[in-house]
Length: 247
Image (cartoon, rainbow, N blue to C red; front, side, top):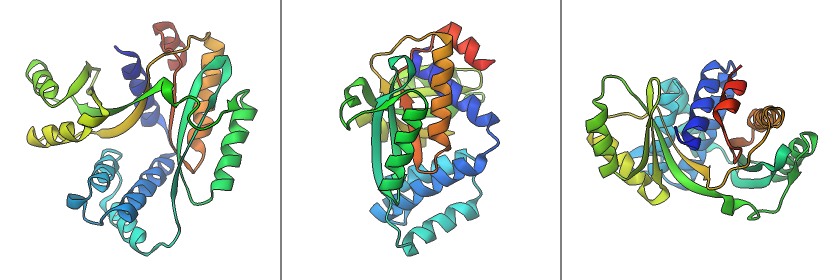
């Protein structure tokens, strides 16, 4: 299993056990709203909105919640800005944090406080972005799909990596092939459980188990902040760490 597939699997299992589903819904609603504000309320004419709705369905968000978020985006005058933060956590592990905020001063203060409290340091924007490549990541329910045949179809659709896990298939594409993979899945009549643009580390940092646990706590602290949409890091996930983190 590739490193980013390991991380996707951990996040997925963690999400399945997370009782704070309202946090997940809140992040999706923000994504729906900014997609509408930047584009169109019609998902057929707005790829970003179509993706947000797809992820909402994958998170089992009720249809009424999705429709309310679209309507709210048309009437809400609050401005949401996309802001990112980069810095280091324990053990020299690099972090990249993506946010949607209606108050940048509050968001900067909260993110800086998490870095400081967790023995990390907030860096300048652009200082660490070279450590991550932007990739498309699709999580597909395995079901009774023919794996060999499907893998060939996915490669034809632009897949760089196809990883078969317990009950899902994790497909990774280059940034420029994200749309092509969406179309390929539509052609195959396959609905992804989740489809996102993620920042995959191109180089990883080894840590001991204690540092790894601190990194996970730091990740949790970021994800609990209402303004944070996504958190990425470049900690190397060895089999030993995977076992320890699963406890």
